[in-house]
Length: 255
Figure: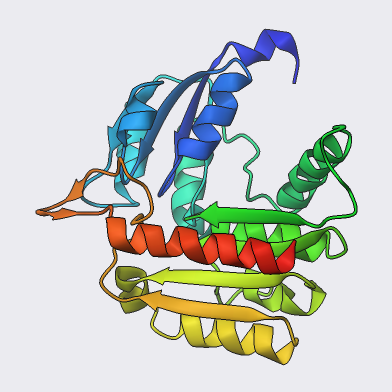
């Protein structure tokens, strides 16, 4: 983007916006955010509002009260078309990481950059992991670059299985990587059939896959500085360490 635009104020909204916010900050934007967590990392770097009640509809009220030159969304908000359209009337909607074609374009740029580094041995495969909205991005990356990506992992991923023709789980036949999906207990309660559909899609495509339910873990359990959810901590150390061990084992087998 042009240098003159980089200093404008960008609002970012979604279930979890930290990754997008940090990218925007590095690009020179003045960033203001709203999501379900407003975790300590995010608050340390930009204005962050935690939407505790009324998510996602309450994001529209937040955006209406927020001075910005444009906004973008992350984290499964793409499933709320009417809300996005209403918010787009409040402030200019910028291109989203979830816009069709953007994940593949971004992944291609990242892979090209890595492959250009002298430290990278291109005889080895690449691994990719994602949390929350990063889960679908992992699947799309593995599908777009099947000969380069050898392993992919999603932890408490959102929007992996939808009723849309572009649902990430339907990309399984394009993937050659080993895959791991760690499912949060409260995500499973909201969509109990998703883990089954995910497993069936990858097994039908003969893709090595493990779909594991972390039954007592909440969405976001892997992140140490997540805030409390009511009286319950979201971060769950034992399950976070288990997820990390699963990731290392996946990478050892697939890369």
